[in-house]
Length: 237
Length: 185
Image (cartoon, rainbow over all chains, first blue to last red):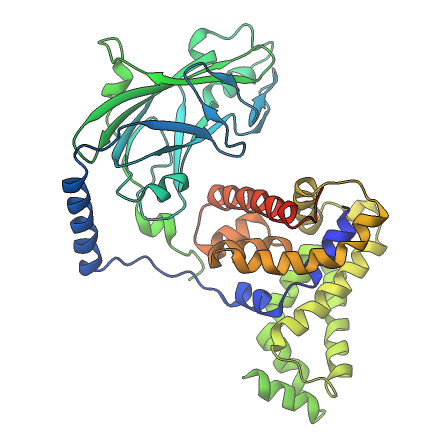
């Protein structure tokens, strides 16, 4: 299918969609007291009735939908080269599970970026530690994305004479710890381990994790949330 | 001024018709033309030609909605100009946006595929109907209006990153949808 075919097809889309796209103005997210009360009631009731629920969590790579398992696999969503150029997103993922109340994410060496497509939750920009409220609706989990960004590695590769093979371990490996709390109060700790391979691709695995005294990065405070008026405000209005 | 009043001015052959049309839809017309044509002079010429085309077609036409009627004329004229220009223009937002879709929907250009182009229009319209409003608007802004990602982000009150990710998922959904409809191999 060439550009002309696609262009011709686009040309003939329905008038109503063209008009809708031009007339749209974003709504301000203004949760009323009733909405907040209802949301808290729903969370409370869900928690009450799901004390003995399942606590399994799986991780999927965004774009490919590939599960990141304990065995691990080479990711196909992004690479970097020796000159520090990045293509795609090396590791962008979402969680799947049930009754997840909140997850605290801690990234050892690089930074991570949280995006909420439902626009209900706080976001934190580029950060290393933050907590995301997942809530009772598991269908929303798909829209909660974490993007791992190896900025420090890219910066190091921009230096003259740098190469992937010569990078120190802290720039070739990283750990994202997930402290997961379920609605019944049960907690589990898991981690995604990421390694940069010499060909510029990334290998990742997801499994159980035991926090030790050496894991100082867990103790860093959570990043503050970006104010909603900045995150969702319309600078043109 | 309401669309009906502007159309009435055209019907009455009033000199005020074009200026009222320009007042109401000049901004969006300029945006559409500039997204496709890199040179502002080309875009300006294209918009003037579009106003003339509206003048020549109303009456007998009585378009509703007027917005999409004018925008379609601007877009068609801009595309004609775009295709007549050399490769030096191929850095426009429109070209980049089309490449995103082309990469998503790539398949060999067989005669059979071209025959199915008509079905593609139908499939595309049906697909748009399945999208949540916000995602549909992002798709149309990107691939019909050829808006830059940053412009869409500002218009939607979202981050650029969020828009990029949404577009990536919409393209993936479109591909699956068209495959499901037998429009892609």
